[in-house]
Length: 306
Image 1 (tube, rainbow, N blue to C red):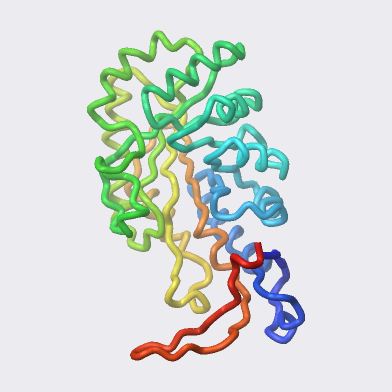
Image 2 (cartoon, rainbow, N blue to C red):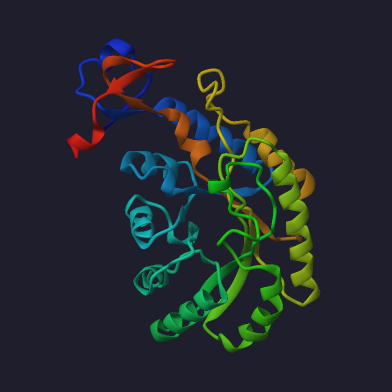
């Protein structure tokens, strides 16, 4: 399946290409990136693009040129981000199952932070950092137990989910941290789910983050940054009428309800909301199959083209 990148191609222009393929509208992507940065910079917020949403080189280079950082969930994504121009100082490395090799890639490149999801992971990073003669900067991914009100398979911030460190693990973790001399805790990380279109879950997230941020401050731990993750959804029902998400409303919720400490940076990891609407899957209908209640459009079998 090939990728085609054009600005506002017309239907008659697309017909000349063999299907199926993905077509990306760079003009819409540029407008979306500019809109997101405009409203983020109003509040001095930092955006990391989630590479899992799309790793096309040309798209990545455009996003990087707009000043975005990168959010990666694998060692290969870290490599890809660096290859396409992202500064290691703007790369956050998340994911529940980082291998030793992947951690070493992050350490070698002195990335912005490892978003750590368990005590065991922190211990492994400390060991590998010691061997490499490095101090690894980490953010603790905490499970805020906030319902994202989205599909159950893409919610990530409830205690029943596999993601993040739970509240009852924090005290034992603080006891262990002084002995992990090759670790520096620089922030807190959160992510409650994907395709979230209501602002209420984000408001609830802010309230919980404020509580946890204060909890650490009471224990003498001053954190450099708060990473609120991503999850902002797009309008699948009316993509033409609403091609760009309401970033002003989204960031406005955090401005209203989040209470960062003085000099504490606020970061986000957006993916789908930045790139999804600029992409279209172009395919040819081979025939219509009539059913009892529904007719089916039969497309080219993608698997046969692999």
